[in-house]
Amino acid sequence: MADISSVPAALGSEAVLPWAREAGLVADAREERRLAAMRLDVLAGGALPREDAADVALTAQWAAFICWVDDQIDRRGLGSVPGELERFTASLRRVLAPDAGASAAAPPHAVVLARLWERTAAGMPARWRERFTTDYTDFLDSCEKEVALRRTGVRLPVAAYLELRRRTITLLPMLDVLERTGHAHLVEDPRVDAQVRDLRWAVADVAGWANDLASAADDEAAGQDNLVTLLARHDECSTGEARLRVAAMIEERRAGFGTTAAALRAVPALPQDRLEELLRYVDLVEAFMAATLHWLAVTGRFTPDPEPPTPHRSTVPPY
Image 1 (cartoon, one colour):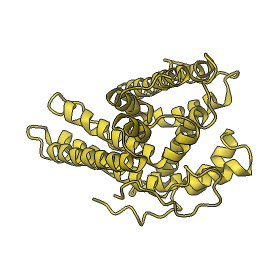
Image 2 (cartoon, rainbow, N blue to C red):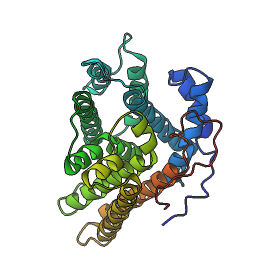
Image 3 (cartoon, rainbow, N blue to C red):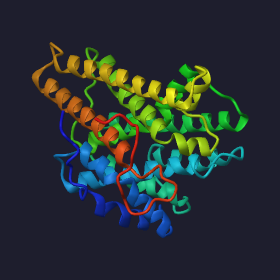
């Protein structure tokens, strides 16, 4: 595995804050401090250690937009009123409709998505566009379902929560973006389809569960369930014990990810060019897994009112 702990923090950093100001994702000094403390350059630079600055910057900007949307839903309570979230997501859905984009009357967040989409989708094949649209639409559907459950006080059992969490973490759309910025396309072939799907799901699961560890205090303050509180209630154990169980789940899923990655690297009977493409994709997903875990351990995203970036203590398992 690559050592991402020494990835230069400057990669992509100067492209995020000015872009976010121009895009309207930050409105004041406090929001600028918060975005800077997120250290999204660490995530993007770690995922793409060998790509050029433009690709790293585009990846970091996508990450900033994804975090912004997530914050609107979780930190700012978007959806507490029936129909509120659906109106917010409708404009995002229109951006991804065939031959669409953002109209002149579109809300600012839809304009941001439209511009990111235009830059990212340029030159990408129709199959990739369909996959991203499917994955992002599923994310929006899942967020609406999660908010509706939250609004009505429904608490999911563990298995149902894990299935929904895989879809609300926005990792599959981000993996699609990385195909473009990391120049490694997903290989579609009946001989590897199931394993590639599990590889992607494993990253989404690990990221979602590790995010729940890192954001447990935030979620508790907002009165929202996450995997830690759910396990504590389900297993009738302390919060500390539940955190240890989540950490063990993460390690087990990472081990399964490693097994799947090794199997894909040894897959027989693919033409040489397809095998090389598959290996590049596995390397990309593996680098993103490492970068995500490293970023979750150092980000200031989950501090109440962050000052300029400082190391963030976390119980997320280090990579």
